[in-house]
Image 1 (cartoon, rainbow, N blue to C red):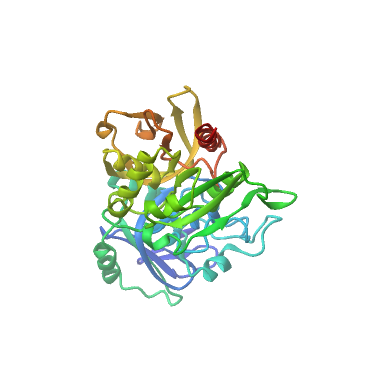
Image 2: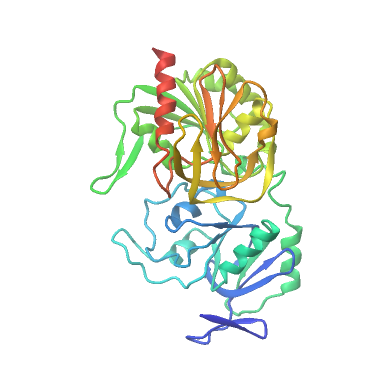
Length: 394
């Protein structure tokens, strides 16, 4: 519990003076207590409604450029482990939470979350009124912000606000090139089992080329689980280089940033993928850029969708699934051209959540069927993709 005293947050239990601040570009200030690495980190402030899976979220490349506010108050209870990560590289810019991090209470934990934050050079703040911050975002849209963590508790608020306000923002920013792999690699690891851990796909019957715009490891595991050998290639790989790998199917990965910015080099390649007739499946950023490739448009959302409890209706079956989502841009329905069918729709705000190209084995969804974290309602989409691959190769 904390209160504000002359601009400083004070912990009522120990009378600690604030060691961190969150300053928004409009001058709003939240005082709290530093976690992770000392220093400053700037980005777009968003909120995530997931109750579990904070480690997976913090390592999801789609969160690059963002400061994650978890609306669930108890983050850090289960510590960290070396398995629940989605990338070894760049991910979220910072962490904002309500309650102090407690000692880990989980059989898989190898240490407390704060130690893990330091090891990954991630700066965060605790003791923030996350309900107030979330309300601010929902009312005014996702702001730029900066977290400053200093043990001496001394902060130049005006200078921090200026840094937040001068950050360019995600609109127009190509972050896929920052989080993508730099060279192709093979993937064969399959899904996790509580008894044996991760498995290995040793008898693949299909070859999938995955274009890495910021791919999550659990996507690759889901494909490997279904009998696929996977070659992951960098975001700027040409279509000729993809074709030279002789793929049975092409996967367009998730990723961060503005799809219109990444599209400058990705869309010409995706158009050739569509025209080739090779079965193609896109998720998140891959979905948005597939839409751009066929003539649709994207736009920045007011607050985005981030969480593991988002209802989506599959318009092809009439079924409703609870999905895991992480996106701040969306495909505009009115821009969908003739020959493109909307297949999925958000039951939160009605936005487009999936499309397919008429007469071609090509489809995409806005959300994350691999979950991690989240429900597994949407795993069927990987099977739908594999069925397209098998029919094409029959």
